[in-house]
Length: 188
Length: 188
DNA sequence: AAGATATTTCAGAAATATCTGAAAATTCAA
DNA sequence: TTGAATTTTCAGATATTTCTGAAATATCTT
Image (tube, chains in turn blue, green, brown, cyan):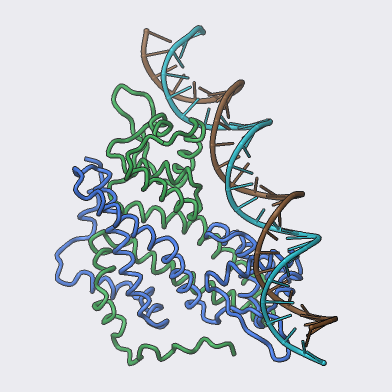
């Protein structure tokens, strides 16, 4: 692996992370190399730096393209494809969230809604109540996510840090005390 | 697979989802069966319903225990172990987030911080700037997450739905217009 | 159109992960 | 302590995923 020591460590780590996030190790490593590179890189650069086959790089880049996580760019007087990642890290995070939503959350919601239409007149079993709760939680999370993506970077950063201010909004008009529902989850 | 039709569909789907979320298909299916069951179930119930071997169930439950996603309970006059999941879906989501934070985010932050200590006096390469940005984004997300878990369920639900109100807080005291930073991400 | 360069595809090899039955370990009751 | 009931472990079998080199395809230049 043809990488300087701290870069190599980062790349290996993100390879492992990628593996837990639905892409395989190599795809994670390819992404990490592109992410740390100031210049866009071509496929053979990745072959050199990661020591994997050209075809493996091609597969990995195909996967990253399908996730919209890399940008294809061209250099003057060079007909090879070069790839880069956005400079803005939040933009990358947002793309990742959006893709996972499309691939995992949306189909799950569709399934839950279809099942509710087909079996909605069944006697209310625990399982069907449970599926409905699941749908509601996912729908609420999606709503939250959709609010989030309307914000610009500065607002997101503020949201993640304000804490106290957010809490004030949440308490507006409500006498509810924290912890009042805390033990409502015992089976019964 | 000994399950009623809608339950089976749900279980199969969540098996696939589990596979994309760092646990394997079978572990996801075991969890889904427990999740949809009003009563706690013992290992042999899971063998019957999923049609997998007893040892595989044992492995799966071990994994779920390590994620703190199941509760061990006992029935009077029965020395078998029974397992259940919390009734409160948000509680489950929170456990999942907490576990993933501990397993993935925290070690990543540790690595990034150590690398910065070791190589902090290096000439400022693009890669080191990039790693620092990464650390900052992850730290901000963790802060946000830690705010989130101080809220009770009702507040979380409100937070995910208020939207407009949240936006007002964010704009407080700032003349910043949405989109004013939007194209700051071109490589330079 | 021919030839050079670059990228993609794909069948099989290599590497990983998952699953099983059998054996070992644990727990409890008598 | 014995033995029945239950759970866990683990080596090898099975299944799945990933990786590679070779061939096919696509793209550009002259």
